[in-house]
Length: 530
Image 1 (cartoon, rainbow, N blue to C red):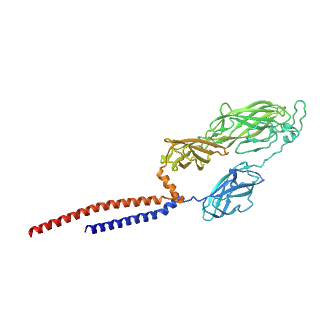
Image 2 (image 1 turned 45 degrees about the horizontal axis):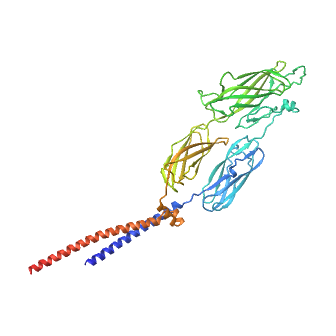
């Protein structure tokens, strides 16, 4: 009887162990495909960039190629790959001559990881000024969503030359050429050539005329009966400091030249700036004299001579970052004391300082093992009046692998999000310093940087994990560790079954001993009755 009970108990325990084992395998098999898929999934995408990271410079009326490099980062073979420039709806959107309905280029098929170059030939329109454009290119392929990316390019305006009588009079002398000191902000000459860069500023000269009518004059006994008007022009200007910042004072020095063959004297100059402001309370001239008035007096300028005039000015603090025109009116007299009037225009570029704040870092987890990753997040608030271009965050440290995150452009008053994954590379002695370098560009493409530090601890990787990972195939290492989980589950199930079996066996033996004892007592009682 005891052997029969033990046999039945063993069979029941074996059945339970088999059922538990099958349940663990079934559950693991159901979860395994999803885990493998999540762990080994690839990021689809096509990457496009301007070759050599170039922002090409085009000239009016000239043909030039713009080259791009397209890379297949999708992990799949892509068919019918095309790249299409967006021509826009207005001339302001597209600086080139539109000679086709579409400039789409077809690249055909791109293999995994393959790179291919594509070239576009454009001709800049003659009416386009010297400035910077931001153009959109769209790339697409079968089974992929369209990807759009913006690129910068620069245009160069067509020079415009005005030929005046004074210019003709001075063509046969070197003194008629530009001898003024520039600000790097424009081009000019003894003639009225006015070619300037809108982003950089410049100057231009107007006509001069007798305020009481034209007429002849004499200078030092020389006859001057040709009726020409003595002309004073602006040949350039400088500012101190070289960059004018909104809300700051600066010294403006204007370079003048008397292009005529007669002396001019009793000269009065008056500067007037454009009115800026959104309402009556804030409306005022963009530039105001920091002390004194806006009028300047100069005694005289000799024939074909030069002179400088200077004034201290203040730029309003709320000015936008762009060039601002100042009108310079001139009144002077010829040798016969006849009054002459003229005018010039000066374009002064104003810069706004970039202002932004970086929020506190959110780090999860605070400590990682070698080879593991921590998520670092923060926000970038653009508090200034200018747009931040091509914002990028780079994370570097002795104990982590270098990581870069591209944020893009951030408008004034907008917020950008920085989200990076930092992988541990080397064990640290406690929390180690990691430096985030934030770089951005202004409208002229000048790069500025700032830094902020955070702390991240990198610990030693567990040996058991390393051993298990080295014994597993490569694909299994990248996926969920199924085999160790199954083995662990089976071991737990077997141990539980053995414990249960021992408890039941003890209980059954106790019951058997109790029955045998009762049987013996019954037999003893029967013997006594007999």
